[in-house]
Image (tube, rainbow, N blue to C red; front, side):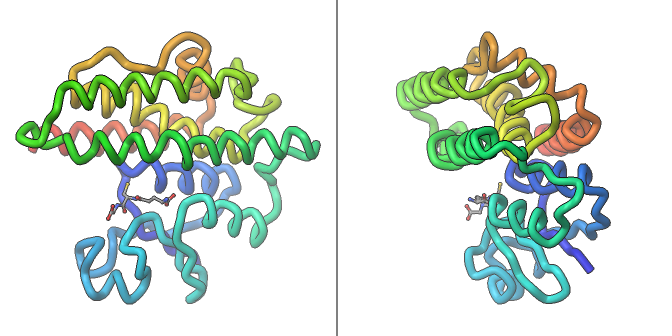
Length: 214
Ligand SMILES: N[C@@H](CCC(=O)N[C@@H](CS)C(=O)NCC(=O)O)C(=O)O
């Protein structure tokens, strides 16, 4: 039995939901046990205190990329790994660029979501940094519909939720123009033609709207 501790707004959790849906996996989606990421109950399951975290018949797998790779290994068909080695490397590169270069910039901005914590100059320079990373990604995203080749891969699972986060969540929160432009914006818009991505983005959007309505 597969269980995923997760939240709909988390881009890392959305990455796993897209992959699981594309593979036709039946997964029970749960909030962190004990009601919070740092509850003793959840920390006993995932000492990292983060979501997503997978429980597959008692095997506990944290971290979105590790979970996606695990599900690929455990349930190989249909595969979201490109077959050609170079294309597969590019899919891994894009997932990694998201985790290594984009995600730390999110963290810097998330601490400023509270209006009392905001530093306008730092927010603007972090938006510039986001735009620069997205600019380097144009060298590797093939598009127009998918990042690598003509079908859904691990790269799209990682990037589409990140791009929602940048284009909608961050731009809306800080009331600044979205750093997602040109071919990256076109790629992101086109990913919505994929039903699994479209669904995950709808779930993220609904979670964002309900958070903003509070
Ligand atoms: N590198 C992790 C990041 C996961 C992550 O940071 N998730 C956020 C929710 S979107 C979280 O659990 N944050 C808790 C914290 O920062 O303590 C992954 O890919 O799964």
